[in-house]
Image (cartoon, rainbow, N blue to C red):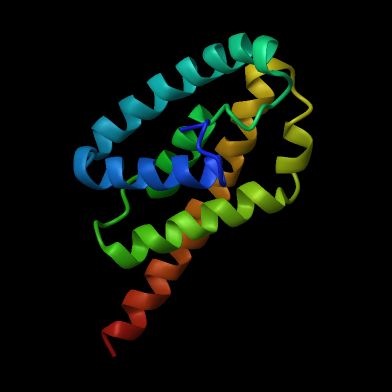
Length: 139
């Protein structure tokens, strides 16, 4: 996915959304997958960064971590997944504090941690949206 010619991180994030939609319907499975992908992501990113350069656009495993955090336990509704995707991409691209400084970490840690924080921000805003949306939908 990292070799996709246009917006490889967005493409990878979209693929992860689809995968979560169809494969990870259990919160427990999401949590276990998240821990595994995080550990593998840090390790792999550290290794390939030496070959491809610092935080190469071809490294997209970190998007898997961020999208999983964004969508964990979110009800399977297309609207929520689309908004989660958009929120994650916005936070991952704009990198507000402390996402911007987390990239100073060395190796795979810097590559993955910024997406962890972007996923946390996205999750918070997505759950606020879900709460407000469902509150007004019941009026």
